Image 1: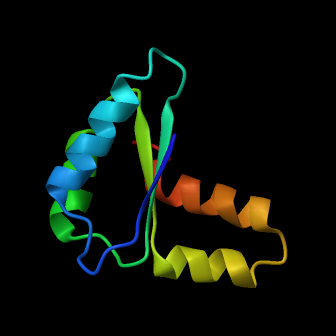
Image 2: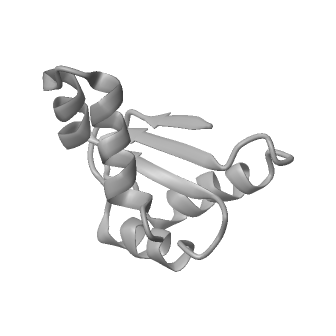
Length: 91
């Protein structure tokens, strides 16, 4: 499941919680959510993601930094896998 935020403000804890609740209510059709933003994430969003890390559902944050990495990557799919591993591996 993917949600894009094109806003002036950073994604905060409440926006993360809303997205995570949508992910939980997909009827088992998705275990991975990708939250893409033109800005970045507030620390509160990252902290909330850590609190939710013991749950089966996982959320990957894609901000300008990760978008830049994907654009510059020789192999976009491999770089995307690295980004996922950095954020959800061992959580």
